[in-house]
Length: 82
Image 1 (tube, rainbow, N blue to C red):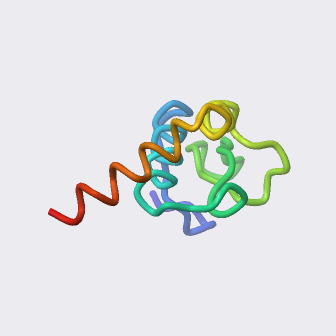
Image 2 (cartoon, helix red, strand yellow; image 1 turned 45 degrees about the horizontal axis):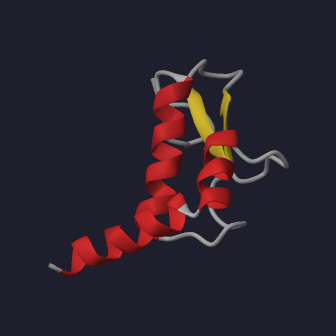
């Protein structure tokens, strides 16, 4: 069943968080762009990404702070060139 929000549905919080981080790596979002966190939907019971949450996903913040996200974004860009 599709969610009335029209957003992509993830079966678990972990899957939604992994997808959020993957999007930041692949799409190369700047620090305050793109989805920032995930939430469990009251309508469908699945997990969705949101860019409206004031609190950034802790795993994403750790990757930004350590420079890991930028390194993975650069590696992703190089992989797509080949």
